[in-house]
Image (cartoon, rainbow, N blue to C red):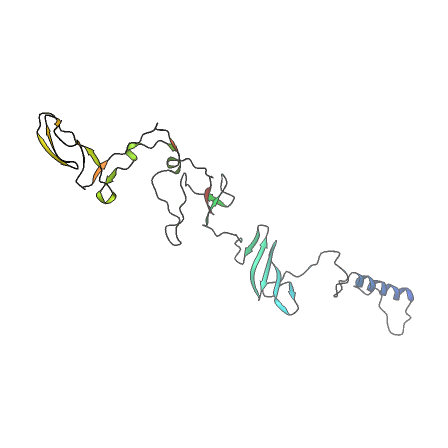
Length: 246
């Protein structure tokens, strides 16, 4: 404010001059911001730019903690006289000026979408299953030889892919075979029905069916049978991509 009229000792003070001084005083009081909050600002609150050691906006009992202007269009937060965070048009940043991110650079994640989001780069990993391993193990690596879609599809199981059955005595492998002896051969065969004499292909006595006496393992081929209809291994799936934070 300014004092409109000044007075000298021993001079007459006119009412108009006195009123002019009080009018100027009243206007400036009206335009002031009361400390008790009974009136609000009607314009911008302008503060000093300040520094980290002495922010422009502080607390009465903590003069080195508050808000100050770091640079043009950059707001700084000072705590204990040091810059701890700042803000500019790109968002929140560290004290060194790096933007805060939810994920650190180099973090890889799954995304259920066709392309990597902004700030991420898609990995060249295609047609593979996901295997969960323990921490510190082989995480982040790849393996296997056959593509996911090649294994999990509709296909016919070939006879060559089926296992042979090895029968042993321990696995209850004893079983019956029919013994046939050709003509013009004299033989005496020992079997479950006793000794049988064979001559010129004719059984003299007993039966021609005998049980194997050997418990040695041997191989039988299991026929596939059926019409060869393809088996459906084409499970339902959801395609995702793996992307890494830039």
